[in-house]
Structure formats: C-alpha cells, structure tokens
Image 1 (tube, one colour):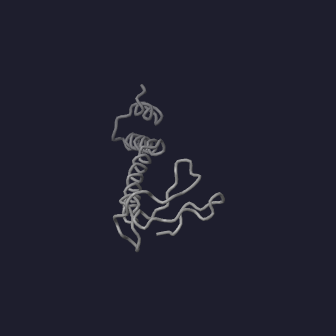
Image 2 (cartoon, helix red, strand yellow):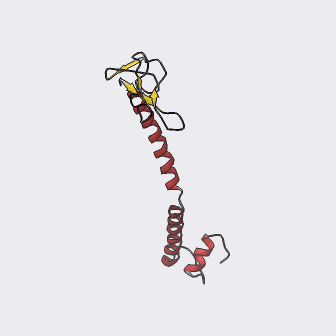
Image 3 (tube, one colour):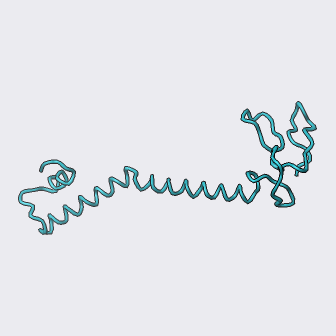
Length: 124
C-alpha cells in the first residue's frame, strides 16, 4: 500500500493511506485529484490488500475478457466489410465467366458483362 494518496501542489503531503482499505489510487470523474479506494481490502496480492474490483488478478481477467470480446466483434466486422463482400462477388462473377468460357453453361450470345449483370440481378 502507498503511504500517501492524492499528493499535488495544493496538498503536497497528500493523505495518509489506511492499511485496511484497498491499495488502489482512484480519481473522481473530474480527474483533478486522486485518493485511496474507499472499499475494504479483502484480497491480499503482492503483499497488499485489494477490493474485488482492483485486485490485480481480477483486473487482468477482466481486461482479457474485454479484449477477447473486442477481437470477436472486430473479426466479425472485418468479415462483413465491403472489400470482402466485393471480393466474394468478384469470385462469383469469375466462376460465371469461367463457366461461360468453358462451355459448361449455355451462354448463347451473352458476353462476360452480360453474365456479370445477370449475377448482380439485372436483365442480360
């Protein structure tokens, strides 16, 4: 545990730490100062007392969980990005063009452009 919390120019000595409370230094939403977490220290780790929220093992587990969720969302977003969607459409067009060129599809008088328009839902 730190001996002093919230030292700054207006209070250079800070506030003495309470050995029964969580060792984490926290800040209010304004961010202008810091003070010792007011929760009771119930988990001992690294020779210090921590509340459930600030225990280093819990902080690490939460960060890993959040990162895993973010990675899953990111991968899903990337899979649905327009570049990937365009690539899939181009690959489908290529398959149609190759089928026409090899004669496995009766193309009649259709050109490659007609085949692509048909694939995109337009009339050839």
